[in-house]
Image: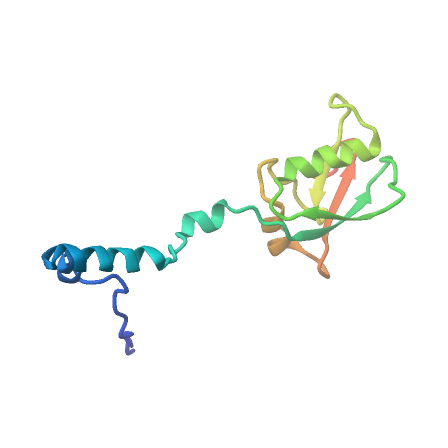
Length: 144
């Protein structure tokens, strides 16, 4: 097994070139600093900043009623991918006109009930069927 190393250099200037302006005369240093101030240096985004941004892509969710649960007039909805699963629960409660005290159980692909703090895009990536996230819902516990 061979490992190939890339010839990657650090884009930041070496420390000796940073101090070069201080050894110049005052007029040359002022000219150098004014030309540097006109240039905008892009700041690279850290990986943390990339994850702080909210993902505005949509996920297609299909709701299926189980047992005596009321059937929705529309089964397919698009939900923001960065939402937590509790937003899906609240959305379905609004659509069904259910109170917080009314029992409602949601399952992914008739198999398991995800945690309310699970991200919808993660569920879609792992458990989608034909590009849809299938969510079964019922008024009594159907599966373990």
